[in-house]
Length: 182
Image 1 (tube, rainbow, N blue to C red):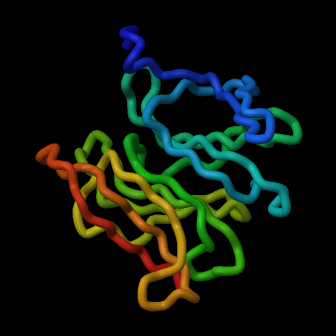
Image 2 (cartoon, helix red, strand yellow):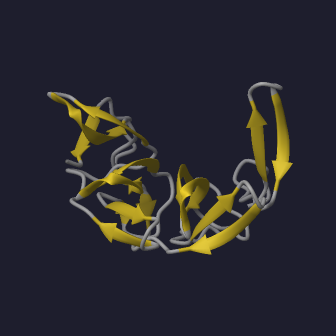
């Protein structure tokens, strides 16, 4: 749309806490709104950290499965492996990989697409540049947040947390879903 509220943008800014300033950096290839973002190892250089722009909706309102990776050292965006399921309004985070907790992966949790609220959970492996579908959420949720951290009951293990959001009746949810990785 062009109402200023629902525009998809390709602009990106970087915040420098020490200087308390925002600086424009390279623009995305695809303008996005309601996209997910997370940082993790760079595809092609797993020792460096990159920023990922995941899914969202384009300027026409089409749900996206495309993913772009920002490399801070070169100030460039590169298209990487696409989600298996397009989505917007979802939670994104990085955490150890399911099945290989010594490596970091990215996660896309829930969201909304042409099928409605999504239960889908996907994991991106920077080492293989691929997304894999994992066990789904118990219910379709969109507008949620996602983060990672120690699991309740086993603080050594790592979990992904899906926090809040709305159900298919647009009812705000006061719940947390936990996805165990190890």
